[in-house]
Image 1 (tube, each protein chain N blue to C red):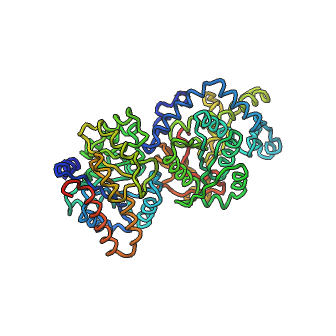
Image 2: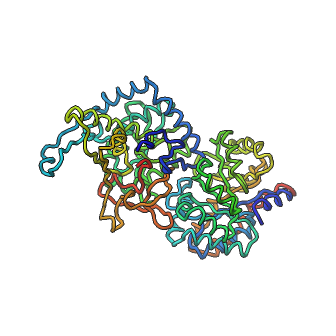
Image 3: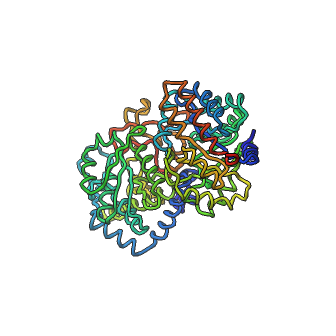
Length: 318
Length: 271
């Protein structure tokens, strides 16, 4: 695991990751990396982000001992990291506050984002609202229909929601449309990616902003149990909450890490979103990673009852 | 004829190159050779043939729809290469393949270039492969004697431009504007400035062709006058195909006529 802790040169985690982007976006991606490396160590930036994370988002979140579940399942003491108690109801705001603050520092007043279930869209709208930025969210038609409430919340927060009707009309197509918007408006627009996916430096940036989850878990579990956990379990769509949970534990070799992918109707059925379990190496959305695709390299449509896990790829650091 | 020879011959005659793009297998694989023939008869000097991909992020709605039509009609990468071979058997013009990197990656670099070579492909364009990620790709393409055409855009810095020119063979593809592919009615002054900015760096060695948004004869004339060696027109042809999906004769006639109009615009002398 040690080698993964190092800075990903050219955005590579082993051979995964990278920057497979249209030329028009290359300078934006390179600029973003420069800005991030500068801001990452900027005390003022850290202070401001910490302020919003605690006062606006509601950090730290509790690490709750689920005594009934532990009893029922048996075998282990189960703790739940309550990211659902954050403003907006998801861990997504850890990342959107960080990146929206970056957008502000980079003087890009228009923020675009993709969303699947709508949680990242809501979190982007929230971060942009508090920081006075203009938010535009791309969302697949399929997802808009099954997640109407989140569309309502985004609108309420002042964000504009663009309906995406291309391709499979879900998260992957929302990312395609956001990228097309970014190509056209790259000078004025910040693309706020919601998971540990996309071209370098996004997987690194999102991981760093989300690792607040794992850091809190570490200090909270030591306080409660005076030891590290035996295992960490997180669900993996793109993989941002998993990466944020796991990352601070990568050097703790006794802590087992379990990522759970969406099984849909079962791996054999083909209707699922389990890129790591059933995918192959490929290139999509700027990164080399595991993808659900056919023998010719066409990206498959995914299936999950959870709109948030419906993505045919996974973060390259996974 | 190779890409290099084609550009040289045209230059000697005082002409720019008309590079016509169509999607392989749009609307059906068996129609592609006929459409290509109409384009060439109309005056296209280089044929750019797309291999469809499910997620074409650099393309606007017109070419996205072409990708979908081609996939729906069962077009595979191998089929497009076979079509290329067929076209090369009848016409002595360069054929350039455009596709996204996952298509090539999936077949495997060695395997893809082997097949491409056997199909007499002259050059490859991959819009989502920047020079930073292209080391192996470039090496294997060179080994097979296939030109690697890279893109430069309005946001490309001088430092990157130099790297891109180093990696490019055949011609340099200039993206005329900030945005995706698709016909635009106007030509921005910034496109002309971009051409003028890039010309000193190619030192007359690598031909320059301009694409994205180029669909009208006057746009073609303007960019050739500004010093570009070629104009790349895609969405305008794809629109004709789309409109005449079920009327083959109309489709082929319109493609031939429009290519002819655009070709005339590349000829600066003797007007």
